[in-house]
Amino acid sequence: MTTTDTGRSAPRPETGHPAPATGSAPDTGLSAPLKKKERSVRRIAVSQTLSRWDVKVSPYLYISPFFILFAITGLFPLLYTAWVSVHEWNLIGGQGDFVGFDNFAFVLSNPPFWIALRNTFSIFLISAVPQIALALFIAAVLDRNIRAKTFWRMGVLLPYVVAPVAVTLIFSNMFGDQYGLINNLLGQIGIAPVGWHSDVLASHFAIATMVNFRWTGYTALILLAAMQAIPRDYYEAAMIDGAGMVRQFFSITIPQLRPTLIFVIVTSTIGGLQIFDEPRLYDQTGQGGASSQWMTITIYLYNLGWGQLNFGRAAAVAWLLFLIIIIVGLLNVAITRSIAKAS
Image (cartoon, rainbow, N blue to C red; front, side):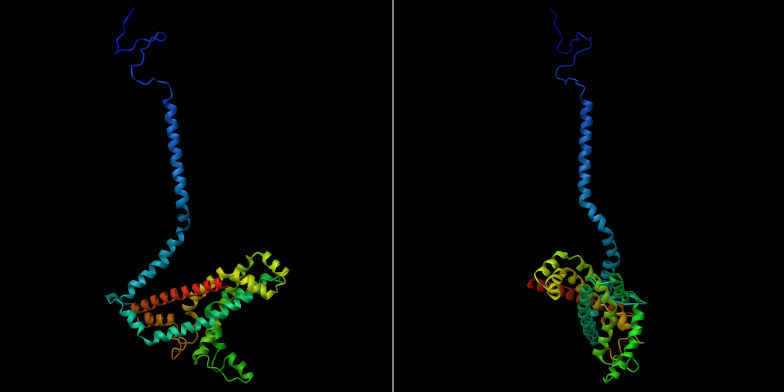
């Protein structure tokens, strides 16, 4: 009987190699597959993490070009205008001393600013309300099954394609005080000539006519696109119940157009309060009339910046106009939503 040393391994009878030492794990030949399995698990975990990040981040990457472009062309000019509005700023000298809200105080205490604000709201109301009403009527007609629908839809958009300079020159001659076409037609039916350039309300009406001529067709096509998205089953059910065209329009079409109407009203508000081309080109001087009959806020801003070369005050007017547009836009949204809830 032989004794073995506990510190050594006894030789294996079949191979003659020493046995593994006491306490060590036996070599089963599974270490390589386990490592490969761990690596595959790690790869799966990494791929799952990347996929989660892709789901969360990729939508923001898709819309990032808009926000980057907006930050460059919209947000930066807005903030830079705010910086200019609190300084003395001249075209030649550039940035001057910090004056705080002195530019805003000067503008708000200047009577021409309030005249321009009155003219802007007057032209906006005279143009926006008839424009949306007429656009609704045109869109409802084009939504019906009429002949040559494509021709008529292209026709209502033609005034929008015409350059605003050409439209303004033609309409300013038509609304001439002495030799205008409109006054000649009014004289044929025994109505005295109207001072389209001297009277305040008449000049606002003439400028609003130009605005409506250009933008009514564009607004009508937006409303027409929304009307075509309304399911036709609603109209068929209303016809079965005996509802006429007028009842269908006010009970089906108008309620279904509420989001689009809010969009149209807000965009019309923004465009109407920023009107510049039509009143600027309505006469040869471009100052808004001899007595500021149709001078808008944008013309007043232009005169401060490029007429008086005072960009600090012009920037203050721009920021005041920005705040006015926000307030009026929020009021329009609130009123539209309250009407929608009431109906």
